Image 1 (cartoon, one colour):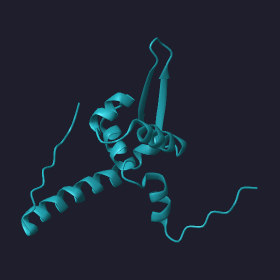
Image 2: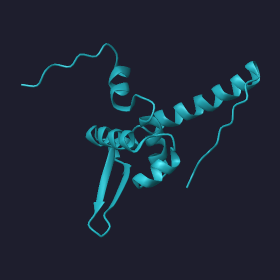
Image 3: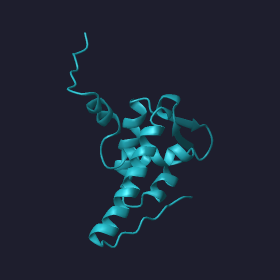
Image 4: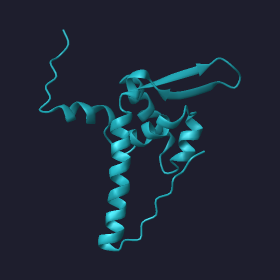
Length: 121
């Protein structure tokens, strides 16, 4: 018998799946297109290869991304949002919008020098 999992509020379950620094960023990149691990690494230059691999595995284990392996030489692997993962798109969009508005607020209210670089391949 599996142990009982108890959450205080629903957001705990959400954070369990997409929480942390890198998972939402990975999901936002996959929201736009299927990506190879090397493409994701290029889009997130400060993530280590080990961390990227770990985060991708956890997201795959949660069922929000799909991993496709092509049997060829050299091997090719691609990641994409699963059908279930696509249900996170409105949440991810709200997070992006809120973040952009927060940056604008900090620039205006606190005169901070912030640059938002939209990196795409």
